[in-house]
Image (cartoon, rainbow, N blue to C red):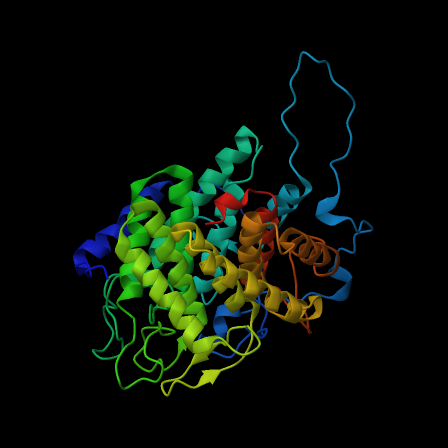
Length: 448
């Protein structure tokens, strides 16, 4: 186990990367539409505030863009006339890349608050959807064959995401009554931190998602500041490990650092295993690998059901809440694949493939269509990553079919996506579809 870093050191590690975000916001985003009342279901019942998935738009049927084409991302770019051999044409963007860019531009027009670094919400979005907008931006940065101007614009967008991310950073839950939080280590609040926002509980899964994106940015830029940020988040995650005779099935990471948080989740612990494995990849610090293995084995030992799928969480008594969601399966698929790469132990790969087979059998297109697209984006990202190692199961075909259906049936005329009944649009959903298109347009080596 790695010795816990001091509060100041961890805080500086988190701050380091955010210092890179001093570039002023330069995009020409349009004003955000007035918020519509109402919310859409957030997926599994959890302590996470319902406002995290607040809908900003309730479209009419007439607003949908029912495209005549059904080929989606598999279609080839339109042919152009042959040019002189003396002029070398830049490689054309794939259809998936084109749609990723269109979805991203719609996300910025619909939800981004120009000049703020933040997205619309109450008054700003929760960290959960913001983290997925960050992930979508990083995915775009990895798309090959972007033009010089497109590359420049994407890098500016990364600066803007980092500028917004620092607004969620809270060093110690300052201003909260003593005893409200089980951890005061530096990390990112679930809402914008004081003074711009109310701050509050820190959600461990949110911080996992941010940490993974910091390492994707480290891979992209080789800036040690991003690595330091991920290590600071990992300190926060590791300190949350719950052991002791007072809890059933000791171990695991709780849902949040709120004192009343009483569940330990697949979605907090499995992505933490992924983050720790990735940190081992870049630092070779054995403590990270040891923690990743412990977290992975805890989920297998406490939440693996007879079906071969993972339940949602265990309560204080160790009772499994068996709700099945695709992102829980995806995170364990990815953790197994990453641990296999880190250790060369074939058992991890075999377990990842077993989970993938069980998930493919259970999560039919109808079940995936009924879930929050964010859950599906996590599932598909990890399934695609496993496929890149084994060429089994057919991850790309499943992901392509999902986003093609979304493009044909859930897209409005302005490229905003609306889901559910009654239909509503929200940042979390838009970021999810943008991510999937971005992942299909990039190499799996950039996913983690």
